[in-house]
Amino acid sequence: MSGLELFQRMSIEQVARWLEVHPFEIVRILVADGSLPSDLRLDAANAERVRVAGGLETWWDGPPVASPGEHPERTLVRALLHQMVERGCVTPKFARADNLFRGLDADHQRVLRRAVNALIKNAVVHSAMSATGLTLALDATKLAQVRQFALEGQGPVGRLWDQD
Image (cartoon, rainbow, N blue to C red; front, side, top):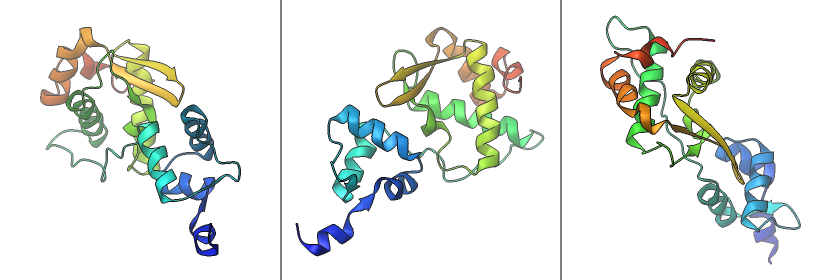
C-alpha cells in the first residue's frame, strides 16, 4: 500500500461522521460483515460497503413543509409514515431505525423519536434487533390505518402520534 493510499484511508470516526452514525455502528456492521480491518482504517470502498451492508439510507433532505392548518410536527410524522409505506417497511420487511431520522436536524429527530416510541407502544410499529442494529417496521395488520393517517391525516393512528 502506498503512502498516498494510507493517507486517503479514514478512521472509523471519520466514516461514522460521513455516514451520520455512531462509530460503534460502523464497528457493528464491519463485524457482522466479517470485514473489520485490523488497523481500523477504511478507504472509500470500505465506507461504501458499510453503507450497503448496514442498509444505511438518508431519507430526508430536510423537514417537510406543513400543510395549511396542520401543526408542523404532525406533518413530519405523517411524512415519516408515508415514507415507511412507500419504502415497503411493513412486517416482515424492517428498516434500520436510524434511517427514519437521518438527514433531519436534532429537533426534528427528537419529534420523530417521540412519535415512533408512541407508535411502538401502541403496536403500530414493531422493533427488532438485527446483527447490524435496531430495525423498525409498520405492523402489516394496521397498514390501512397508517396509510389513512399518512395520506389524509385521519384515522386512529392520528390520535397516537404525539403521545409520550
